[in-house]
Image 1 (cartoon, helix red, strand yellow):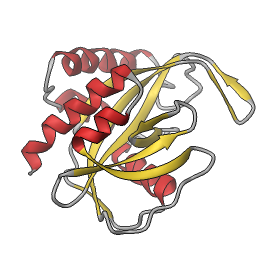
Image 2: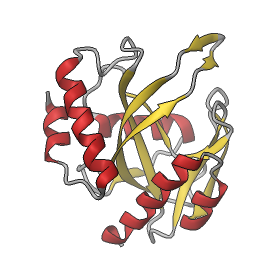
Image 3: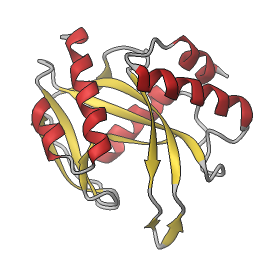
Length: 186
C-alpha cells in the first residue's frame, strides 16, 4: 500500500507523531478496511493546513458538528492518495480553485478522537481518525463559499488566531504544532 510506505518514511516532528505513526502502521497491517468508514473504530482521514502565500494566515472553517473553528479535510473513503483527498475536501468545503500543495510529502500525523454524534440524521459512534495532514497554499483574496452541511463560516486568520479561536483543547495543541512547523516553509 502506497500510503503505508509514505507513513513509514515520514520523519516525526515530536513524540506525539512518533507514537501515532507507530500505531497507524500497526492498524494498516491489522485492518484491511482501514481506508473506509466500514471500520467503525478507526479509519483514515486527511486534513489540509491551508496557508496564504506569506505563511502569515491560515484558512479555517467553523465546523457544524464540532461547533469550533477547524482545519479542512475529510475521510479517505477508500482513496489511499490522501493528498488528493485533502485537495478535494478543501475545494468542496470552501469552493477554492487555486490551491496547491507546498509539498507532496506528509506535513503532520495525528490520531484524533471523534465523539459520537448525529450526521445526516444517523448516529455515528465514537471512533478515531488516523489523520494525515498536508500543507496547502491558497490565495487569500479568492472568494470562498461555505458548505452548509459541514461548515457555517470560512475565515482567514493569523496563525495565533487560529489556535485561540478553536474551542477544542486537543486541537489547539495540534494547530500550534502545525504553525510551529510552517517556519520550515517560510
